[in-house]
Structure formats: structure tokens, C-alpha cells
Image (cartoon, rainbow, N blue to C red; front, top):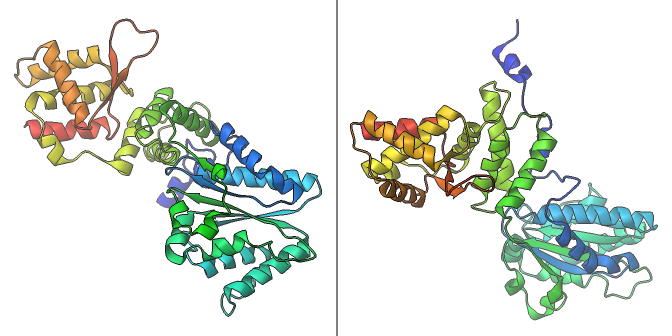
Length: 392
């Protein structure tokens, strides 16, 4: 007889490839980042002629900085190999290695995992690195991810030394190229000598993803990670809507993963909008008893009606017409006289302003001025229970 643990471990799941939902996963195609990859290729074209280059990639969290660097560097290494050239690519996370010696040790460990972690000065370690590259007749492409953590703790000493790596006259030239990644503008950390090694036009700035771009990213991950037809199209729409507030692809992918887990926990072979709302409530819950208690009675009745309709229809959106009809029925339930159409619209705007709902145009193919209402931050069932408790 199988144990409870074995039953759960062996139960079916909507997720076929969990790796595709990992933050470190690099898909074959980077959605909506072709132009940025092209710009990096233009910057680093001289590497194929053994001429080092330096660049900075900056942008908010979840804009694809690390993915772009990983994809570009691994592709460049393969292209160089086809031309008979050796480029060693090393990726260091400076949040984990925030001192000069720790970061440089991480680079050396790429070539020699047994290299001792103490007893060598920075200059001695740089010489060891140079010998490793000469031995391999290779140049180094080094990515310092979250470089601001290193700069804050240790200053620009290591970066300055790395940019001057090939200055000494040696028989074998060992070019070293740097890509610094940061959410913040790191140039103010640099002194004049260090900043001179970074060309102003070698700065790649990434903007937040738009709602439609996030939709395409979520759809790609659904196709890569989930079994066929296990994620409702409306759930993908809702995921894009929710994550568009931050423009953050990481957040969108995390929500998608947690939505799948929510479906699995209920042993349901379909990721529905309610699972997305549950994932959002777990990840970024903005609903509190205090905020709800600040709403007036008819604002609460409007919110209650929206949640009831979403739960009943098992859908991501309710149109404003259906929401108003449900509001009128809800008023009857609570012995309240329904307010006018104009007042209902003002209630919608009030509760949207309070952060409980999102309202968007219905789009093409729909007559009139109806709009679609979603409940992005909390499952409809939980919202119903919270509002009912207050209405008592």
C-alpha cells in the first residue's frame, strides 16, 4: 500500500518540464529581445579579431538582463569555436561574491577548481588567471552580474585591473572583455580612470516589458513547461495583466509556476483564472482587512458582486454589464436599494483606485462601450468571504 507521500509524489501534474519555469532557464528564443542581442553583437564583434570590449547592461528587475547576457555569450563562444578561436565565458554573481578576491577566485575556479581560496594577493591571482588563458591560447569573456554589489563593497579596483589586463607587453596576447550587469546606474561608482575604459555607446539599457510582451513570454513558457491544453487562455491573459503593473517577466513566470502548483494541489488538470488569483494572493497579496473596511457599503456590494460573478462563471473577467446586473441582485439580497448606473460606475472607479480590481477595454469584436473587470490579487472565493464578513 502506497503512503500519502508516495501518492502525492506520483500524482499527475499539469507541469511537464519544471526547468522551463526556473529563473536560470535560457530558452532557445528570447522573446522581444532580438534588437538588444543585435546591439550586443555589434559591440562585441571585435572579439572575433582578438580585440577586447567592455559593456554595461542595465535595467529594472525582470527585464531579461541576465538571460540576454547568457544567451549572447554562449552563442558567441560557439561562433568563435567554429572559427578556430577559444573564448572562455565566465558568469559571476556579485551578490554572492561581493569582494574582489571572492569574485576573482570564482573566475579562477572556472579553470582550476582546486585553487586555494586564501593565501594569494589580488595581483598574484590576476597573474594566475593570465597564465591559465595563455596556456589555453584563449581570451576571457567575463560577466559580472549585479555588479553594483561588488562596487559598493570593494570599489572599482578589480574592474580597473581587469580592464587593464592586456596592457602589459607579453608574447601571447590574452584579451579580457567585461560585461557588467546592474539594475542601477553604476557609472557614478567609477573613478575617472575606470570610466574611461567603458564607451558611452556600449551601454545597453533595457526597459520594462509591456503587457503584450509579457503575454508572449507567458505563452512561450506555457508551451515549454506545461502539458498541452492545461492552461486556460484566459489564465494567460490574466497573468499578463497582473504582471504588467511591474513589467517584470520574472514575476510573470513565478506566478505561472505557482498557478500550476495551485492546480496540482487541487488535482485539477487545468490552470484556471482562480488558480492565478490564488498565486497572486500568495505572492503579492494587497488585500487587507483595513483596506476593505475603508470601503463604503455600496462599494463593498459592488466588489462582492464582481467576485461572485467571477467565481460563478469560472472566468478571468466579467463585463461591466453583467457586473451591474449582479450588483442589483446583491443589493436585493442585502435589502439595499440599487444605486443609479452613474453611481455604479463611480463605485467601480473607487474600488479600482483602491487596488482591488482592474478595468480594461473589451477590445475588438465587442459592440458598445462595455469594459472587462478582473480581480487580480486574490481568489474570488476568498474575496467573497472577506466582504461577507464585513457586510454582516
